[in-house]
Image: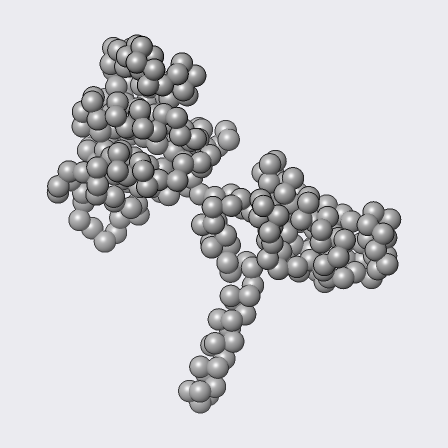
Length: 270
Protein backbone atom coordinates (compact mmCIF):
# COMPACT_ATOMS: atom_id res chain seq x y z
CA UNK A 1 0.00 0.00 0.00
CA UNK A 2 1.51 3.41 -0.96
CA UNK A 3 2.73 5.57 1.90
CA UNK A 4 0.26 8.36 1.20
CA UNK A 5 -2.63 5.86 1.21
CA UNK A 6 -1.47 4.38 4.51
CA UNK A 7 -1.23 7.86 5.99
CA UNK A 8 -4.73 8.77 4.80
CA UNK A 9 -6.12 5.49 6.15
CA UNK A 10 -4.47 6.02 9.56
CA UNK A 11 -5.77 9.59 9.73
CA UNK A 12 -9.29 8.36 8.97
CA UNK A 13 -9.07 5.76 11.73
CA UNK A 14 -7.81 8.41 14.15
CA UNK A 15 -10.64 10.78 13.17
CA UNK A 16 -13.24 8.03 13.59
CA UNK A 17 -11.87 7.28 17.07
CA UNK A 18 -11.94 10.93 18.06
CA UNK A 19 -15.60 11.05 16.97
CA UNK A 20 -16.51 7.81 18.76
CA UNK A 21 -17.52 8.70 22.32
CA UNK A 22 -16.34 5.37 23.68
CA UNK A 23 -12.74 6.24 22.80
CA UNK A 24 -13.09 9.50 24.73
CA UNK A 25 -14.40 8.13 28.03
CA UNK A 26 -11.05 8.80 29.71
CA UNK A 27 -11.33 12.46 28.70
CA UNK A 28 -14.82 12.67 30.18
CA UNK A 29 -13.60 11.13 33.43
CA UNK A 30 -11.00 13.92 33.70
CA UNK A 31 -13.73 16.55 33.28
CA UNK A 32 -14.75 18.24 36.53
CA UNK A 33 -18.39 17.54 35.70
CA UNK A 34 -20.22 14.30 36.41
CA UNK A 35 -21.43 12.53 33.28
CA UNK A 36 -23.51 9.64 31.97
CA UNK A 37 -22.94 7.60 28.82
CA UNK A 38 -26.23 6.98 26.98
CA UNK A 39 -26.41 4.24 24.31
CA UNK A 40 -29.42 3.31 22.18
CA UNK A 41 -29.52 -0.47 22.56
CA UNK A 42 -32.71 -1.35 20.66
CA UNK A 43 -35.28 0.26 18.36
CA UNK A 44 -38.53 -1.02 16.92
CA UNK A 45 -40.66 0.63 14.30
CA UNK A 46 -39.87 4.13 13.14
CA UNK A 47 -37.19 5.83 15.24
CA UNK A 48 -34.93 8.89 14.83
CA UNK A 49 -31.84 6.92 15.86
CA UNK A 50 -30.34 3.53 15.16
CA UNK A 51 -29.16 1.05 17.76
CA UNK A 52 -25.65 2.00 18.80
CA UNK A 53 -26.20 5.77 18.77
CA UNK A 54 -24.38 7.34 21.71
CA UNK A 55 -24.48 10.53 23.74
CA UNK A 56 -22.64 11.85 26.79
CA UNK A 57 -24.70 14.00 29.16
CA UNK A 58 -23.06 16.22 31.79
CA UNK A 59 -24.50 17.34 35.11
CA UNK A 60 -25.11 20.86 33.76
CA UNK A 61 -27.30 19.47 30.94
CA UNK A 62 -24.65 19.92 28.25
CA UNK A 63 -24.15 16.94 25.95
CA UNK A 64 -22.07 15.51 23.13
CA UNK A 65 -23.28 13.09 20.49
CA UNK A 66 -26.94 12.36 19.79
CA UNK A 67 -29.63 9.74 20.29
CA UNK A 68 -31.82 11.13 17.52
CA UNK A 69 -32.74 14.65 18.55
CA UNK A 70 -36.17 16.03 19.23
CA UNK A 71 -38.35 15.20 22.23
CA UNK A 72 -36.74 11.82 22.91
CA UNK A 73 -33.27 13.34 23.16
CA UNK A 74 -34.50 16.01 25.57
CA UNK A 75 -36.12 13.30 27.69
CA UNK A 76 -32.94 11.19 27.66
CA UNK A 77 -30.92 14.23 28.79
CA UNK A 78 -33.37 14.88 31.64
CA UNK A 79 -33.31 11.22 32.69
CA UNK A 80 -29.50 11.10 32.51
CA UNK A 81 -29.17 14.08 34.87
CA UNK A 82 -31.49 12.33 37.34
CA UNK A 83 -29.57 9.03 37.03
CA UNK A 84 -26.32 10.82 37.91
CA UNK A 85 -27.67 11.28 41.44
CA UNK A 86 -28.44 7.56 41.74
CA UNK A 87 -25.08 6.47 40.23
CA UNK A 88 -26.68 3.21 39.09
CA UNK A 89 -26.59 1.87 35.53
CA UNK A 90 -30.04 1.23 34.10
CA UNK A 91 -32.09 1.00 30.90
CA UNK A 92 -35.22 2.92 29.95
CA UNK A 93 -37.73 2.22 27.19
CA UNK A 94 -39.42 5.10 25.37
CA UNK A 95 -42.68 4.86 23.41
CA UNK A 96 -42.05 7.72 21.03
CA UNK A 97 -45.73 8.30 20.17
CA UNK A 98 -47.51 7.61 23.47
CA UNK A 99 -44.88 9.01 25.83
CA UNK A 100 -43.38 11.83 23.78
CA UNK A 101 -45.98 12.64 21.09
CA UNK A 102 -43.43 12.04 18.34
CA UNK A 103 -44.74 11.25 14.89
CA UNK A 104 -42.17 8.45 14.51
CA UNK A 105 -44.32 6.12 16.57
CA UNK A 106 -41.64 3.53 17.31
CA UNK A 107 -39.95 2.30 20.49
CA UNK A 108 -36.43 3.09 21.69
CA UNK A 109 -34.43 1.55 24.54
CA UNK A 110 -31.55 3.54 26.01
CA UNK A 111 -28.89 2.23 28.39
CA UNK A 112 -27.53 4.77 30.91
CA UNK A 113 -24.08 4.23 32.45
CA UNK A 114 -22.86 6.82 34.99
CA UNK A 115 -19.14 7.36 34.43
CA UNK A 116 -17.55 6.89 37.82
CA UNK A 117 -14.49 9.03 38.31
CA UNK A 118 -11.52 7.16 39.76
CA UNK A 119 -10.95 7.53 43.48
CA UNK A 120 -8.08 9.99 43.97
CA UNK A 121 -5.93 9.25 47.00
CA UNK A 122 -3.58 11.88 48.43
CA UNK A 123 -1.06 10.54 50.93
CA UNK A 124 0.60 13.27 52.99
CA UNK A 125 3.94 11.87 54.08
CA UNK A 126 6.34 9.69 52.07
CA UNK A 127 7.88 7.82 54.99
CA UNK A 128 7.81 4.05 55.44
CA UNK A 129 4.02 3.82 55.81
CA UNK A 130 3.23 6.35 53.08
CA UNK A 131 5.44 4.64 50.51
CA UNK A 132 4.13 1.18 51.39
CA UNK A 133 0.55 2.38 51.06
CA UNK A 134 1.24 4.15 47.75
CA UNK A 135 2.67 0.92 46.39
CA UNK A 136 -0.48 -1.06 47.31
CA UNK A 137 -3.34 1.27 46.40
CA UNK A 138 -3.13 1.39 42.56
CA UNK A 139 -4.08 -2.30 42.51
CA UNK A 140 -7.34 -1.45 44.25
CA UNK A 141 -8.73 1.32 42.05
CA UNK A 142 -7.02 4.38 43.52
CA UNK A 143 -5.27 7.04 41.48
CA UNK A 144 -2.56 7.74 44.06
CA UNK A 145 -0.50 10.85 44.82
CA UNK A 146 2.30 10.74 47.39
CA UNK A 147 3.19 14.15 48.80
CA UNK A 148 6.31 15.18 50.72
CA UNK A 149 8.60 18.18 51.03
CA UNK A 150 11.77 16.34 52.09
CA UNK A 151 14.78 16.01 49.83
CA UNK A 152 15.70 12.51 48.64
CA UNK A 153 12.62 10.94 50.27
CA UNK A 154 11.11 9.65 47.04
CA UNK A 155 12.01 6.49 45.19
CA UNK A 156 13.86 7.00 41.94
CA UNK A 157 12.18 4.57 39.56
CA UNK A 158 10.45 4.67 36.19
CA UNK A 159 8.13 1.83 37.23
CA UNK A 160 6.12 3.59 39.93
CA UNK A 161 2.36 3.48 39.47
CA UNK A 162 1.66 6.53 41.60
CA UNK A 163 2.52 10.23 41.25
CA UNK A 164 5.16 11.77 43.51
CA UNK A 165 4.56 15.40 44.47
CA UNK A 166 7.61 17.10 45.95
CA UNK A 167 6.37 20.22 47.74
CA UNK A 168 5.23 21.43 51.19
CA UNK A 169 2.01 19.78 52.37
CA UNK A 170 -0.03 22.96 52.71
CA UNK A 171 1.07 24.16 49.29
CA UNK A 172 -0.10 20.86 47.82
CA UNK A 173 -3.47 21.21 49.59
CA UNK A 174 -4.05 24.51 47.81
CA UNK A 175 -3.63 22.80 44.44
CA UNK A 176 -5.91 19.81 45.09
CA UNK A 177 -9.51 19.78 43.86
CA UNK A 178 -11.49 18.23 46.71
CA UNK A 179 -14.75 16.40 46.01
CA UNK A 180 -16.64 13.20 46.80
CA UNK A 181 -13.95 11.14 45.01
CA UNK A 182 -11.08 12.54 47.12
CA UNK A 183 -9.39 10.40 49.78
CA UNK A 184 -6.78 11.83 52.16
CA UNK A 185 -4.33 9.93 54.36
CA UNK A 186 -2.21 11.94 56.79
CA UNK A 187 1.00 10.16 57.83
CA UNK A 188 3.57 12.95 58.00
CA UNK A 189 6.80 12.63 60.07
CA UNK A 190 5.58 14.81 62.93
CA UNK A 191 2.53 15.54 65.11
CA UNK A 192 2.53 19.26 64.33
CA UNK A 193 2.61 18.62 60.58
CA UNK A 194 -0.20 16.07 60.90
CA UNK A 195 -2.30 18.66 62.69
CA UNK A 196 -1.52 21.39 60.14
CA UNK A 197 -2.62 19.16 57.29
CA UNK A 198 -5.77 18.08 59.13
CA UNK A 199 -6.68 21.69 59.85
CA UNK A 200 -6.26 22.45 56.13
CA UNK A 201 -8.29 19.50 54.78
CA UNK A 202 -10.76 18.95 57.63
CA UNK A 203 -13.40 21.25 56.14
CA UNK A 204 -12.88 20.07 52.56
CA UNK A 205 -15.39 17.73 50.88
CA UNK A 206 -13.84 14.25 50.82
CA UNK A 207 -14.96 10.65 50.66
CA UNK A 208 -12.48 9.84 53.40
CA UNK A 209 -9.91 11.56 55.59
CA UNK A 210 -7.75 9.61 58.01
CA UNK A 211 -4.84 10.54 60.28
CA UNK A 212 -2.30 8.37 62.05
CA UNK A 213 -1.68 8.73 65.78
CA UNK A 214 -1.95 7.21 69.23
CA UNK A 215 -5.19 7.47 71.17
CA UNK A 216 -3.60 9.99 73.55
CA UNK A 217 -2.44 12.13 70.63
CA UNK A 218 -5.91 12.03 69.07
CA UNK A 219 -7.61 12.95 72.35
CA UNK A 220 -5.28 15.93 72.84
CA UNK A 221 -5.80 17.05 69.24
CA UNK A 222 -9.58 16.84 69.49
CA UNK A 223 -9.64 18.99 72.63
CA UNK A 224 -7.37 21.67 71.15
CA UNK A 225 -9.20 21.76 67.81
CA UNK A 226 -12.53 22.18 69.59
CA UNK A 227 -11.26 24.73 72.13
CA UNK A 228 -9.63 26.82 69.40
CA UNK A 229 -12.54 26.29 66.97
CA UNK A 230 -10.22 24.89 64.30
CA UNK A 231 -12.76 22.18 63.39
CA UNK A 232 -16.24 21.41 64.68
CA UNK A 233 -17.31 18.23 66.46
CA UNK A 234 -19.02 16.99 63.27
CA UNK A 235 -15.93 17.70 61.17
CA UNK A 236 -13.67 15.85 63.61
CA UNK A 237 -16.07 12.91 63.71
CA UNK A 238 -15.68 12.55 59.93
CA UNK A 239 -11.94 11.93 60.36
CA UNK A 240 -10.80 8.33 60.81
CA UNK A 241 -8.29 8.63 63.65
CA UNK A 242 -6.42 6.62 64.64
CA UNK A 243 -6.45 5.62 61.01
CA UNK A 244 -7.19 2.17 59.62
CA UNK A 245 -8.98 -1.07 60.42
CA UNK A 246 -8.27 -2.16 64.00
CA UNK A 247 -6.01 -5.18 64.28
CA UNK A 248 -2.60 -5.84 65.81
CA UNK A 249 -0.58 -4.13 63.05
CA UNK A 250 3.05 -3.42 63.99
CA UNK A 251 5.31 -3.04 60.94
CA UNK A 252 4.90 -0.24 58.37
CA UNK A 253 3.63 -2.79 55.85
CA UNK A 254 1.03 -4.11 58.31
CA UNK A 255 -0.09 -0.61 59.25
CA UNK A 256 -0.42 0.34 55.57
CA UNK A 257 -2.56 -2.78 55.02
CA UNK A 258 -4.88 -1.71 57.84
CA UNK A 259 -5.22 1.71 56.15
CA UNK A 260 -5.75 0.08 52.75
CA UNK A 261 -8.51 -2.11 54.19
CA UNK A 262 -10.31 1.00 55.47
CA UNK A 263 -9.95 2.76 52.11
CA UNK A 264 -11.35 -0.25 50.24
CA UNK A 265 -14.25 -0.53 52.69
CA UNK A 266 -15.20 3.14 52.27
CA UNK A 267 -14.85 3.05 48.47
CA UNK A 268 -16.89 -0.10 48.03
CA UNK A 269 -19.55 0.94 50.54
CA UNK A 270 -20.04 4.21 48.72
